[in-house]
Image (cartoon, rainbow, N blue to C red; front, top):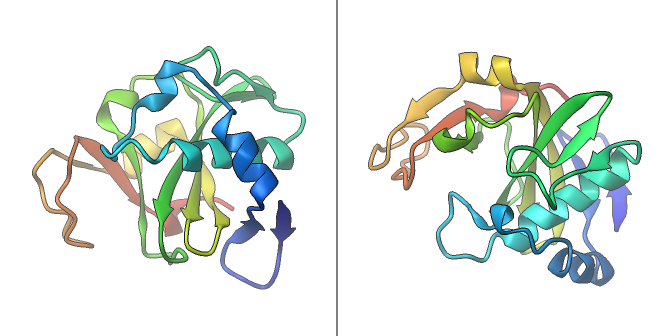
Amino acid sequence: MKALKQNEMFDKTIIDDQTIELAKNWSDFQGNRFSIRTDGTKMISSNLAEIVFSKTYPQATRISDSDYHADFVIKGKRVDVKCKERTVLCKEFYEVSVEARQIEYNADWYMFYSYNSKERVMEFLGGIEKSDYIQKAVLYKKGDIDPSNGWKVSVDCYNLKISELSR
């Protein structure tokens, strides 16, 4: 795993074979099996995001193996790490999502990542306090069409433009 911090929009981390192998065994916790994506393949991406977060914030305590609501605790705040897998690098006008069923979870912050599986690059998109996310995000119901990208919503979720996140 190699961090790249260039004059780019998002911090990027190159994901190597060793990190992919670590992600395959990162967690057996059944709570981490839920995803807005229904094909079951996104588990590795989420695990990779948690690994990158843990390397970036070594002082954070990992709780994702036992807690449905958050992945880490850092400075007394519960952090839920979110990741979308894509085949392209992220753009600032893209959106992040939190499933509506997760809004009531006991988390203080969301940290968002995007994993480009073609290039094996993890991008840190930014973070936001949960209360701010709820105020700013748009709720889409299953079956709605997101007007920003034409995506037919598969589960109720709250979406927010990446440009609204703090970096």
